[in-house]
Length: 220
Image 1 (tube, rainbow, N blue to C red):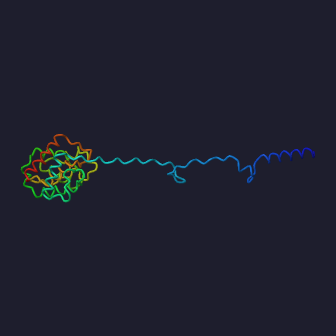
Image 2: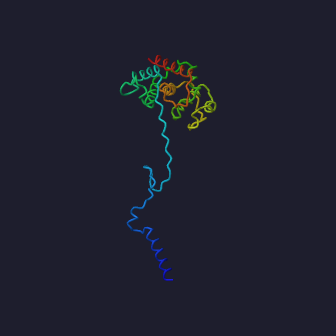
Image 3: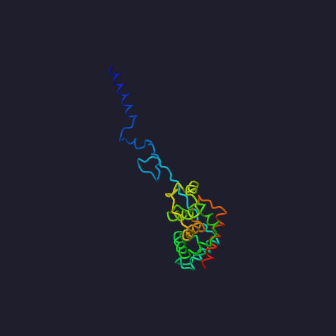
């Protein structure tokens, strides 16, 4: 019986010796599981992050060659555009600055409007608005009203209607073409400062270029 107890004691002692005890020298050399690498942009407790899609860069403007150059030259010569002469680089000019110059020019040369081609003006009116900016929208509406073009007809097919606050809104009819309105509209086209969703037809482009040429010649 004493022999049996001695054997059990010897067996338990050997098992304890086989398992490394905390703080024992052998535990310092035991293999450890390496931690998972952490993303350089993650914080503790963060889950997986979605990568943000880069915003598309705006398309560079491409003004309409001779029409843009001639229009800007007229504005500079008349003192409607301040600062250095950038006639040869119309793409660097702010469209807002040029629109202001176009309106002032139109106010000073209103008499020219009655000599402009009615068919070309109507082509511009039927196309719709080149911008959803308030003053440009109402300039376009007044031109349409002169030709009795219904707003519902124009707005229903407009590609900008979802972002426009003035869809189908009527304006009072005028008995004349307002040159400041017309110049504001055509300036946006010749500077290529209208949304890319709008597709300018060859007929519209020809009408606008003719209106610009006639306006310059008649205002000399």
